[in-house]
Length: 278
Image 1 (cartoon, rainbow, N blue to C red):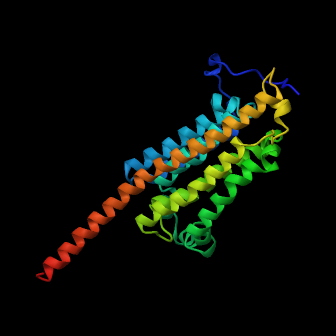
Image 2: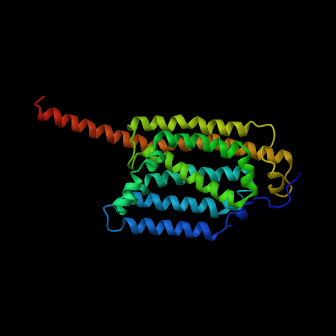
Image 3: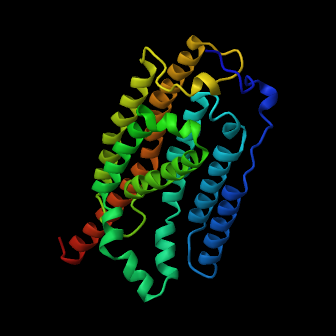
């Protein structure tokens, strides 16, 4: 059945926006809260820039032309997902918001962050498990089709990508309290997650039929069953190639952290040997 509701994307749509008051208010509120919390503290500017960068990427993902066509084209929707979970979320992880929150809270609030629930949610095994389940669950099951037909579920899904991505990459970057992995293991942590995106992307790129019936009505005017399936294949390729590329890109700061760690460790060992006259 051809699509009947939405226009076909063209370059003149690039300046279109879909402003919504709820995400806008939340983004402004988070920016104000973070800036206020770090005011007067010895807080690295690079972390503040990362947080604001994460908010900017989130804004572009949910309110720019990407959001205008996110339920019209599966490929566009996949770009939106990658922006949220593999660009915005790593930036939030690099900004260490939980660590800043810990500094601002009183003793009772810090006790909550040090409690069992918080420690469980931020544990590396839990973070990896959430990522490994969330990606295929939201792309290979009927949940995706449900999201296409219910705006509220769509918004919750956006939040899920940010939260799951943040929990995953906070372990990878190791800038916040909690169970800390050796920098070398952090690289392994990220690389082991790559097959999750590869499997999901390949499953979509190789499907022989449209797995999301809602696109029959949400696809652009003039769309056919073949063009819709081709769009799904393109989205799968974006998940596969784009997702793997962004995962590899995330390894760069981890490698830098590992190098600094080994350099400091070597210097400390040399100083200890010098003190012992060896």
